[in-house]
Image (cartoon, rainbow, N blue to C red; front, top):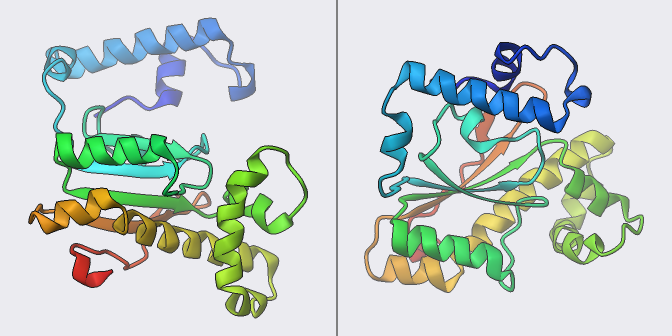
Length: 221
């Protein structure tokens, strides 16, 4: 089982707060982690040198509080990961599309998991509407989702609940976007075993929730 970051730091004789971490501490934590992995599995790193065959592609938010491998308890090598602000799948984003294509066509992943989280800064910024600079062009995609669901969101009077609902709606929209890519459509046309899921993570309790929008064929789109 991978050593958690806090355990790595403790074992490397670092006892300060997260805000006090310097670059030297990061190297110490890395050595502690590497040592712990070898203690639990002497062939761990040599095994990783082999061809990666993850079953999952995780499309998540760049938020530092949502590390893909850790929150599902999987070691390195088990999940192929793409992250951006607010876990968007944009049809003009060649970065995301390239990761998706490589995962589906080359690695042969069986599950694409779009994962958002409550308390998402990108969603909050999109709702706030205050100019943030260049990122506003990216946040426009979330604002489009909010506009599509304007009536529902306007009926939610609690600001936190409204933001949480938009986090969910955004995940659902990105699942739809992923399903409509030529990459996923072509995989389904050739009969590839591939499902696209929408999950959301609670920062307040560490629990993942399935939004029940899984699609496994073009017929569901």
